[in-house]
Length: 471
Image (cartoon, rainbow, N blue to C red; front, side, top):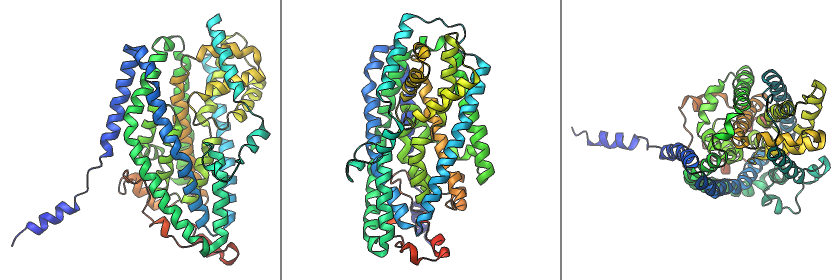
């Protein structure tokens, strides 16, 4: 009896090799090559900055359509509007609490290390500080302006403005409208589901430019800063990196384990490629679209992902909070005018509020620091120049910590609201259900474009509302 059919069956069943593996090997090689180029040929490294900037711009242009599709599909397909309000309230409460923890940890470490002692202020350092203060003042806006800025000039401009909160606002309005339309809104949801697949396919194509972007970004960082920027400021840098690590693995890890039973190392390993992308670009925003796709695939429902992730990118800035704390203490100590505990609390609360919306912008942290000091303690502004040279090296840690915080927040809030499929999460984190790098679309629960239509909120019993929450 011939064994040919069995061989053919085995060949058919054999999984295809994940070609994206080569992509991320290429990113690692590009990072090493970029650092080497920047250190050996600094002028060449600085000139390669447009490569990194261009790649981040390509990713950024995909963020708004992905957020729009995700939120509209999630909100439009649930039966109860109360779920969205509960999600938003829990998310904001969680973000405020964790930001407070981040501030406290940074304050304790900063007061313990005293990293700014022994430095001398020169005219060049003072000029650099004043320049950053001017930059921070230009981008500063009042609370009223911030809130009014969430409302776009028109319905369509909210999708093209580049402002994530405007996109979130428009998507929520349309999602609620489709929710109230019931069956009549199903064709729109089906169409948006297909658009989402197209958008993720485009994103998958763009990702193949990641090695080029990583090479340009790292060459610029190494060429512009060099080794000289690290010598006298090593204590601050090392202390900041250690503090961020303690926050992620101890604070966030404990919260995740106690709340969901999930090991933080398993979650971060699942998101390893996103961390590599952030490390190469110094921007957590470069990984935002992939975080949305991966959280859905891991078993967090579309509504939770759509609300928590975009909101977290504007309000959950754990790494930035730690940075502002330690940098403020560093500057005050370097100028020989240490802050009292009361001044520390007052200044840092002020800057935490002023920092909203800076998570995805490379280098925005130091502008927020300078702008906050200029408004609250103008006598300390000159000292910002001390850390200008190493800010790009610290921005990686800020971005990585912000990203880790938003990842954990999405899973934890999903658990609290009943939007986490624990069995699916376990399968994904164990490697039994790998993420589809080619399409980036979650299919483990069926085609979202063919999900059951949302019913009128007033006509759906409570039990049915719970059953139809997952798309």
